[in-house]
Length: 79
Image (cartoon, rainbow, N blue to C red; front, side, top):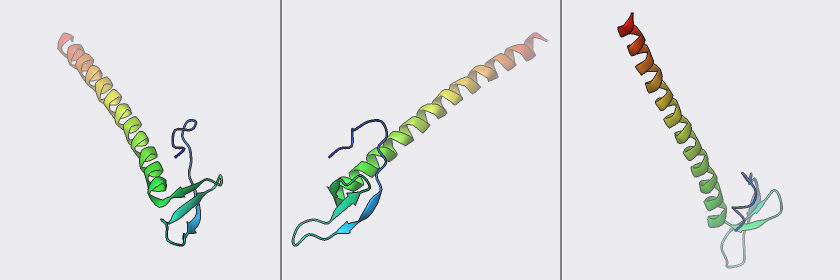
């Protein structure tokens, strides 16, 4: 499975192919043939990465807000 290639790999399904007795496969836009479970794993991996990035940004914003609230409280008490 080529999930770790490059930065964020965009996977677009061209269509489902039915094997004679095997698992259903997906052909990606770049011609890569994956089983359905591999394709879903790639999508999940990308989604998890995006959620982790968003969570980090939210934690950073929360920390910044707490610092600003502290400064505001300090400024209010000093005036």
